Length: 353
Ligand SMILES: NC(=O)C1=CN([C@@H]2O[C@H](COP(=O)(O)OP(=O)(O)OC[C@H]3O[C@@H](n4cnc5c(N)ncnc54)[C@H](OP(=O)(O)O)[C@@H]3O)[C@@H](O)[C@H]2O)C=CC1
Ligand SMILES: O=C(CO)COP(=O)(O)O
Image (cartoon, rainbow, N blue to C red; front, top):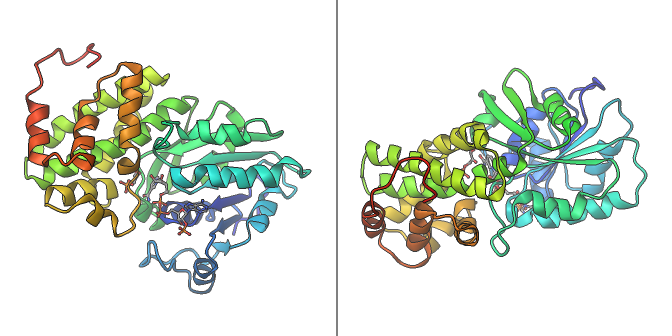
């Protein structure tokens, strides 16, 4: 565990695969505490250096400490220090409002010895409202004194990060000190942390690439070949960019780590759960069967919200539409491909469709 006070104290809230991997990364140089709501998970990590449910074959760093006390995790980052504390939210979109509310309740009336950067890592839209994660987090936390907000995203399979393989991530915030806190905690021999101020662009890229990965899984599951996958990735990126620009993101973000980078990883990488959903559907499994394993596939959860957002902004999202038709309306995967291929020809760029 790091003791140098120039490194932030870190609390990672949510010990799924991504929260656990990020805690393993952070604890190499920062004093890090991982919070899990299940005491059995905490006990296993502390006693055996293994997570009982995720990344189960990976030995976590012995210096990684876990707790089931949210108060202890937050007291850890609020303790006096030379630099701001860092809270990393490792929960999916479905748990973001709940964890932000808990943070709000803890932080609002307590005197604190240090400022606190709160950074979420989930990738999706809220299914009912189409809100992006920053809208959910801001509603709970934006007004609190000494609190800065940001999003950490980019091409990063938890499994590889937990094994100490190299990774590059982007931390977007409109407050420079938040990106600096994340960089101080995570940037090191195995991780490059880039900064950005384009929160919307980063979040839209992260949400939409999951839907494109489902589409690529469907295409690959049908055996349609490498050309089809490359076409889907490229036109998928155009689709992500159209929606992202309409929502207020910046063009260059979509060519970066959290746009093209994460799209390429998730659409092609065998570890992607969203891609695995597409593969399984193309091979004849029902969505219910695929999801019965309990796996987190944010693209399934947010595809309808993405489509609704596109409609509300007058942006066509043909790949997202095709994925929704297959997942929720019983369209055969092969028929969805035919529908996509039968669209009229159009200019490759400069067209809002
Ligand atoms: N896995 C990866 O490679 C990456 C994932 N992400 C993103 O990170 C997010 C999390 O994914 P991932 O870690 O894989 O998901 P997992 O399914 O592995 O884990 C989710 C974790 O969140 C916890 N959780 C959910 N809701 C709450 C809540 N309200 N309060 C406290 N804990 C909660 C769950 O706890 P419990 O076990 O007790 O139910 C579980 O431990 C997703 O949005 C994903 O897209 C981003 C980059 C990489
Ligand atoms: O976000 C990820 C990689 O950057 C993880 O992708 P999956 O959720 O599809 O596994």
